[in-house]
Image (tube, rainbow, N blue to C red):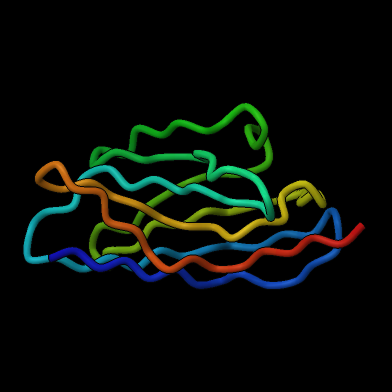
Length: 114
């Protein structure tokens, strides 16, 4: 069983920052963790991911503004979001895969006003 819980969302003005957290728990070792987001009436899209040895990837739409990091000792993955734009408004989810199954958190809402 794998559980993921996102937190840190909120309502900010354009140009401001937020840091999202994804706390995960499992009796098994969790390796890669990814962040996705889903805006209203749009498909869920990949935002960033980080491997167990801290190799990171970011979508081009957020590169230079977002960073992903993890604290393996505390089982938390962070998504630092700077210079937020209205188009970043979405529900943000974290996800991991174990034994061929995808596990998702319930999401945290991020709303950016212009």
